[in-house]
Image (cartoon, rainbow, N blue to C red):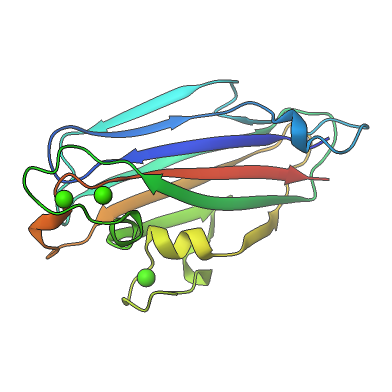
Length: 188
Ligand SMILES: [Ca+2]
Ligand SMILES: [Ca+2]
Ligand SMILES: [Ca+2]
């Protein structure tokens, strides 16, 4: 059985209150392909947990996080590997007479400044696909993060992420945001 949990990080643009939220999505039955054993991955040791970290405003050169998510194998069987997948969708606020920047371009100014799992750095292994000299959310969405170290039964490891909006971006980014989803999938 496969334990699947999901974290969503909401990042809005440079105006108003920014919400940095996590919420887990419990096991997705469609992915439960095996019938023996249980790999019941949980986030922060609870099902359906919602952790909201509020940052006053996300402006250029401002950061959110580092935020720590405890990944816990609540099942009886060990998991040999953990797969991570990151995606995002556009999530805009009021544009305030600025142009609407695409989700891809918005994700590209969200620099990932911390990314670790179980104390190991993941950031160094992510390719700067869009060649803008830093690792951003768009790069993260294209990275292959499958095959991370697994979790023994009842073992927990921390996943830590921090994101910074790049300095020097133009005013058109005002009101533009992305809803980032990170999916954690334990494999036997
Ligand atoms: Ca937009
Ligand atoms: Ca990049
Ligand atoms: Ca805008």
